[in-house]
Image 1 (tube, one colour):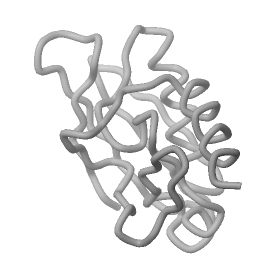
Image 2 (spheres, rainbow, N blue to C red):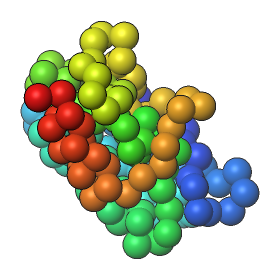
Image 3 (cartoon, helix red, strand yellow):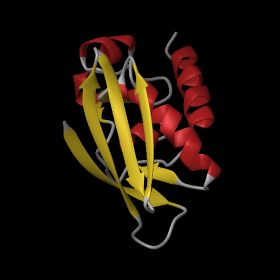
Image 4 (cartoon, one colour):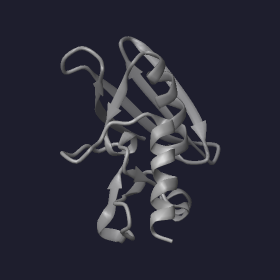
Length: 132
């Protein structure tokens, strides 16, 4: 079990949440605690579980400030299979990715571009087309 502290964009100043990851019956369970609330999702990988939780947070006008919520970050199929969706690639239009582009989805950096789930998925599709 791992815990990550994540700032929330759209909330009170310096508002944070705590994300807890664990394996349950061969699946990836993510629990997200904020504002005395608890959200939970269990999927085949942590990125998929995080997307479910992010969509619920979007209803409250909140976006987590971390790589997993960044417009230009998305896991490959191998990241999802081998790394349980805990790591993903930072992408740049027209550029292929390498191991140097890998980030933990719950970490943050100066280059995070906060995004909705739908915009992030669309950006990933556009990036795939840009490298064909």
